[in-house]
Length: 292
Ligand code: NAP
Image (tube, rainbow, N blue to C red; front, top):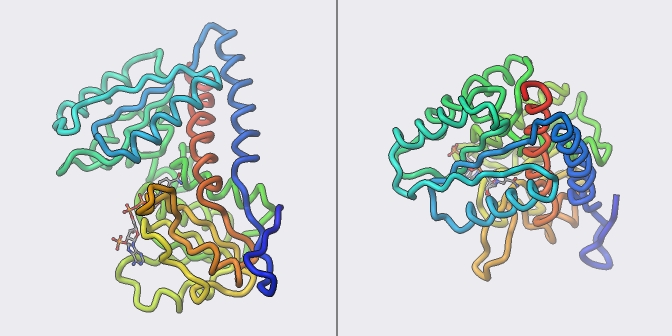
């Protein structure tokens, strides 16, 4: 763990970096993809995009680039930003039926009125490398084998990588989306943490978050979590990836303020994000190995 200090008097919070772990995962992915290609099964990932959202575009380019560098073919299937549900559904069904495709990601945001949880049901669970199909969500909740959403898996992988114990500890997740908050809470629960979930209607957020040994924040509001939300020595995982007014990437946590109390904090950028991308590729290679 690297350590940093925001002022000479403040205690130092460790920086729980994700780039080293992402590099390790990508090396494993590249070896797996090469092995699969050697068996005559080139690993293939399809990303279905129906948005002109800038952040989504940036993310898809970075996923596609990382796939290419790892020896995975990445097809970006670009639909119109106003594509209807039927078009997206048929596209996902076609990719699900295509034996040469091993992983499918349905990029968000989707056109207005189109719900990811309904459309993701068209992704067969073995190719559902970002855990979006309600079947994958249910299997995860039941403790059965399933691809977990990559971001939730990335949170756990980062905590493990930095040796953060979870059993018997108090974990608080802020945010309850299907892609991040809820599955992260499920995975923490599976690891025997005592888990609370906070959301928009939670009264006195700080009252809850101050009890956390491990605090995971996945909201989408720059600087929502400050030092007063955090217990002395707590581990803080910042999932937020927001565009700041100056165009830079900003998390949900006011890192400079929180670092005066926390024991460790994941940076943005360079924390959960790169591990998420690497794990989507990892899930795709696993899918090719099991079903290719
Ligand atoms: P989302 O679907 O919009 O969900 C946001 C959640 O935050 C909701 O559950 C909402 O509560 C809750 N919330 C909103 N305002 C709140 C407040 N003032 N206090 C407490 N809770 C509040 O967002 P998401 O898809 O989960 O993404 C969350 C953040 O993570 C975003 O910044 C996103 O860009 C980022 N993200 C990062 C990665 C990565 O790999 N690093 C991947 C995915 C997402 P309600 O349910 O009550 O509305």
